Structures are given as C-alpha cells and as structure tokens.
Image 1 (cartoon, rainbow, N blue to C red):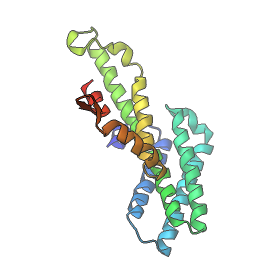
Image 2: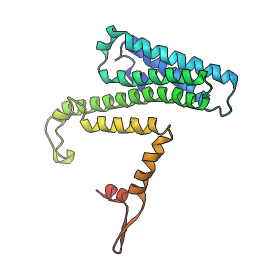
Image 3: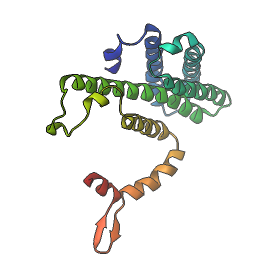
Image 4: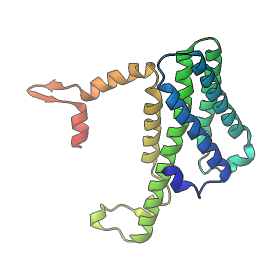
Length: 208
C-alpha cells in the first residue's frame, strides 16, 4: 500500500530498485518456510542471494542516481544487504545452509523494513505539514503543538523510533539478539518489590 501511495513521487529508477528488492524479499520469505534443506533449495538460495547482491551493487555503483534520493542514508541498508548476500553465497557454497539462509533473508528484510519505515515517516510528516497549513493558530485542544515548526521537518523522535524498530526487526533473526533482549525483557516486565509495593518498569512507563 505504501508503494502504491508513493509510486508517483519516486523516480522510475528507484521505484524499479524497490520493487525488485521487494519481489526478491517475497521469494526469500516463501523459501524460508521450507524447513528441510535440499539441493534444489540450495540453488534457489544461490539465485536469490546473487540477484539481491547484483541489485545492491547496481544501486550503489550507479552514483548518477544517488542525488535523486531524498534520504541518502538509505544507501547504508542497501550496502549491508549486499554484504550479507555475498556472504550468504560463500557460506552456501561451503555447505553452511542454515547460516546462508539466515543471511539471505535478513539482508532483504533489513532493506524492506528501512524503506517502509522511512516512507511511513514521510507520510506522517506530510500529514503534519497539511495540519500546519490548516491550523495557523495554536489552540488549547491541540496541546499547544507548534505545527508550523513540526510540519517542515519530521521530528527526531520518528527517526529514533525508525532505527529502534529496524534494529529489533532485523536483529531478532539472529540468536545473539536474545542475549540482549532477554535481560531487557526481564528488567522491564518482571515485577520488583519495594517494601509492600510491587511494580514493574513497564507499568511505570505506561503510567507516565
């Protein structure tokens, strides 16, 4: 749906790159449903990894199109995808199929999540811009939000949320992520006792 909304606001080149990556991501997601490794799947994985790496290299090396990107930092997820896909090919050739599949899928997920989150931020920012045009005066019922200031540029909070969401969605594919997530999960959700009172950090945050 986000692709449909922004189809006229993106150059044909970058829209083609995005649709190609999204198609490869869909195929990789379907392949990820296969639990039993086999030789045909191994060839499919090599094909998907190779195609993804070539798309990434094509996007990174074609510097003439970089200036048309509104958000230049989107090149970093593409670079990470390219590295992960090339690594996946090497591991696949040496028989490490599980790790190869993990890198193949995670590399594509990292780009898809980053671009979709970025477009959501742009969509919200456009909404704030329209609000700033309509409500020219600050009113009590809008909590004194300065729409003229907010509408010009997306708040930093949105980008912090984007990075945190990207890190969680991509990182949870790796086992090492649990080593970080489980202690934080216990800290936030486990109940603590202070005298006769029991509380959790999560409930306190929800309260505020």
